[in-house]
Image (cartoon, rainbow, N blue to C red; front, side, top):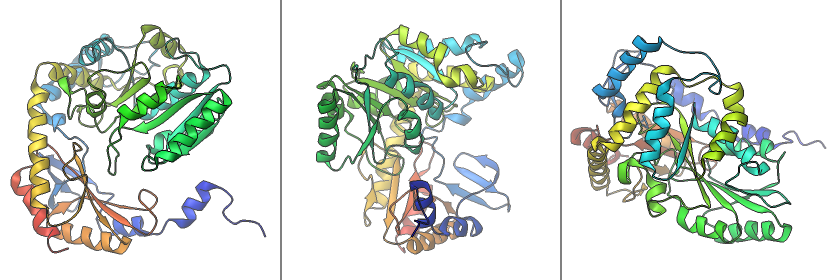
Amino acid sequence: MNDPTPNRIARRSAATTDMYDRAVRAGLTGHTISARSGKSVRLADGEEYVEFVSCSYLGLEDHPRLVQSVRTALDLYGTHFSSSRNSVEPAEARQLEELLGEVYPGMSALVFNSVSSVHLGVLPLLGAGVLPGYPIAAQGPLFVIERTAHASMQALRGVLEQVGPAARFRIEDPQSLTEALDLARSQGRTPIVLVDGIGSMGGLIDVKSLSDAAAGLGGYVYVDDAHGISISGPRGAGYAFEALGCEVPPSVLLVGSLSKAFGGSGGFLLTHRAEDVTVLRREANPMVFGHSNMITHVLVNTESARMHLDGTVAELQRKLWENADLFDKANSAGTLVNAGTRSPIRGLAMETEEAAFASAVKLREAGVLCFPVFYPVVARGTGLLRFALSAHHTPEQIQSVADCLASV
């Protein structure tokens, strides 16, 4: 008999329930907002709610300096300059990369229009061995992908396998990593380990140990620290940079987001040699065939980088971690995902999808919006309420969550 679900994508779709559709119909997610003020948003029905959904963990996106940078961009360039970046770019794009080089001393930065574009542009060239600073064995690479690494990396597996084979491992199962690295060693391949820094649904990855393990085999760790950028570390360099001892080892390629706590839009890669940037500008798919970053956000990103360097971000970091501590204390009666960690994400795990759905309903009735999550984002049959914390949440807004969850 033919398998009615012959591939992984089809099997995943077949196992996905209608819970997300129900959550949209119930107004628990898929929101449309018509206005915002701080952490309050007005929905299409005219009602206002406190949101714990946005990944702008420092609240920079409505800072007067960034708002003014948009006005400046409009005056200088209009709304957009439509060209591939390796054809024409504004002067501020290079300024931004120079400023990122100050945030990460000794590193060369290259900005893309999204983190997903970074992955698409960098990983195939890295595996092909064409980046001068990252040599690859004659037998080619073995891509070693952590099971919970972001979907934007997982989705590229078919692309990566045009360059070299791929294996998966589980961060909670060290033996699975050992087996993958042993496979690379036995085949004479260079391991390229793909991981997140901070998981989007929970967990912090020990990037230092992974870096050491990969370096021992002449391999690399490619870290997507999208959720970790700006929230910690000197000059807002982020979780992974701080965890690595405030430097990027030769065995690590560090990727960051400009679209979350950074307050702007886009993604960036840090390399150890300027020659790598030259190759990527010339050959990375999104640089050649994709559009450039929106001109307004180029100037927003550049001003945000200055705020990282002048101490503004350090003060917002302090407020974020005060709020994280307050959230943990207020909800100490329950078991929170990431409680007590240097992650701005908290979660309340539910044994069933129905329990997560019902709890999200109670939160909305109390004027609070969170992100209810179901399979395939979390394990099949379970649910999660995800809360994104911000430096801009007030103590009263945080307490409103605790009051509601106490009855869940």
